[in-house]
Picture 1 (cartoon, rainbow, N blue to C red):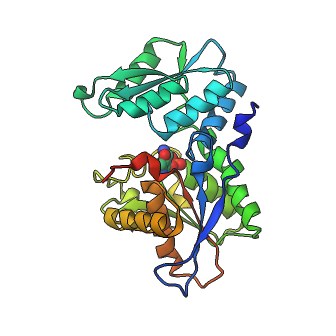
Picture 2 (tube, helix red, strand yellow):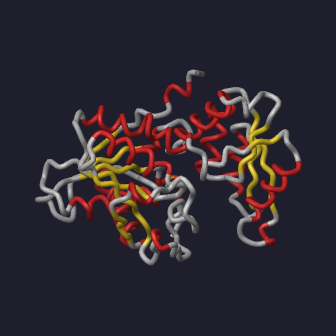
Length: 299
Ligand code: PMP
C-alpha cells in the first residue's frame, strides 16, 4: 500500500466528561478528522477501492464514477489516486465551487449535473453514464459490504485496543450509509453481546418506520434505508435536536478546543444523553466523522 494510505485509521480517541450530569459516565470520541482527507470516509474509501481491485472489477483502464461530492467523494478520490486509478465525480451544478476546486486539486474530474432537473440529478446522471459506458465502475457505498467491513476491520478493533478494555458498554453513531454503525456495531457485539448499538437521528425522523423529514444535519438520515442497514443489530435510536447539536458544538470548541462537524455534534450529544443512564466508568463510545471547518457559516 502506498505510504499515505497507511495513515488512514488509528485516529485519536478522547474523553469528554458528562456535561449534563458530572456524576454519570463521560463519553469517548474518535476524532476522524485526523484521517488523510479529513474524514471518516477515507476508511471505506480505501477498503472499497482495494476490494474492487482484488475482485478485478477495478482495473487500470477503468474509471471510478461516483455521484458524491462530500467526504465520500474525497475519501474515494484520495484512495483511488494513491493507488493509481482515475476518479470522476458527478455533482449537481449548484454545489459549492470551493468544494469542487478542492476535489479537483486531488485529481478528481468533476462532471456537473443540472440541478434544475430536481433533487438527485447527479445520481441519475451517474446511473446513465454507468449504464451506457462500461469503462466506468461505481463502488456504490450504500450497498457495498466493503464499506461496513472497513469499520469492522479498523474502527472497531482500534476502539478496543486504544481504550484497553475487554468490551464497550455502548457504541453510538448516526446512519448515513450505515457503514459505521453496522461495521463497528457488529465488531463490538461480537466481542460482547451485552454491548448496546445505538443509532442517532434528527428529531422528527423515525428511521425504523421509514420516516425522514428534510433536516439540516448533513450526512445522517439521508432519506432512505440503505441496504447495508440491519435493524436487528440496533438496540435503539436516539433523536437529537438541531439547535442543541449546534450549542454543544459551540461549547466543545470554546471550552475544549474540539471543533467538530454537525453529524459529530449529533453523535456526541446522543452519546452524552445515553451516558446519563450509566454509572461512571462505563464505556460509551462514538465517532466525530469530520471537522467543523467544513461547516463554517452552516446554520
Ligand atoms: N457524518 C459525516 C460527516 C459523514 O460524511 C458520514 C458519511 N457520509 C456520516 C456521518 C455517516 O456515516 P455512515 O455512512 O458510515 O453511516
